Image (cartoon, rainbow, N blue to C red; front, side):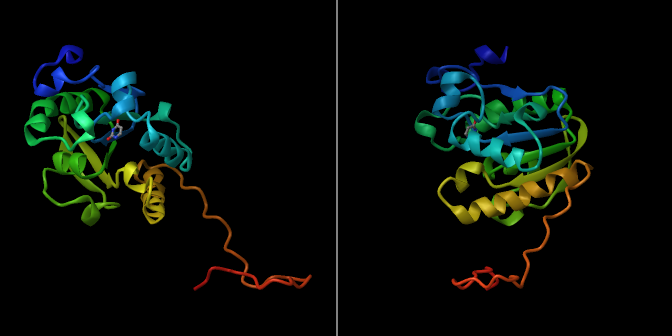
Length: 204
Ligand code: URA
């Protein structure tokens, strides 16, 4: 049972194992890094600030948390939210591979460096590979792997939010779904009546 897992030392400091949440039939699965403070308390992944941003980004492409499956590389919180250690990742990866085998997603979006490196099997970092899909075999199935920045990276960096929105914007296409038509272009000329203030069109 994963709930009683004692494969690494995180078993001594966790409140509980945070396995995953969402639809068992999901075509789209997200893999983050590790539970944080709130996830450790509630037993559900991505319920803190980064999780709220994940929900907003999903809403932006017409999806809800219930439509997808969300998990992490580590199922237990590292003390103080420090980075996962190589031996913890190694001890825990069997749980993630089994999860992928059970869910059988079509598209796996890796959030940040740890999930991306583990599931791609390559050392290339997220800055280099985000937004580029690749074909891999995971849990015995052909899967499209899609690396994206971790939403936590955007909490204090507005530019990162734009990159995340752009990368999320490709998800419907990767799932083979109809893509929403883009919004109409901003008009270049403002019609009468003339405005007293100069109009900022944001062209430059
Ligand atoms: N960050 C993660 O990577 N996973 C969570 O569940 C929460 C925050």
